[in-house]
Image (cartoon, rainbow, N blue to C red; front, side, top):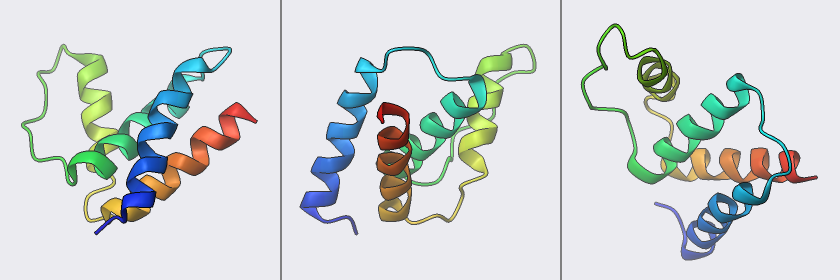
Length: 87
């Protein structure tokens, strides 16, 4: 279970990423999305989006690859990635 400090750092990283100067590449965006969702919601349990929803499918698959990762680990990895991008 994430600590309050970790939760606050995670939420701050989600705010901080919005001030990024330039848009990261698609792979990095998918990592950010997947780590955020895993940290915030846990394992992906929604149905996979339809065939023609390419973006939704890519996001779902990125998140699904993190199945089983504890929320606190996903939060730490998300925070680290945001810090790298903002450095």
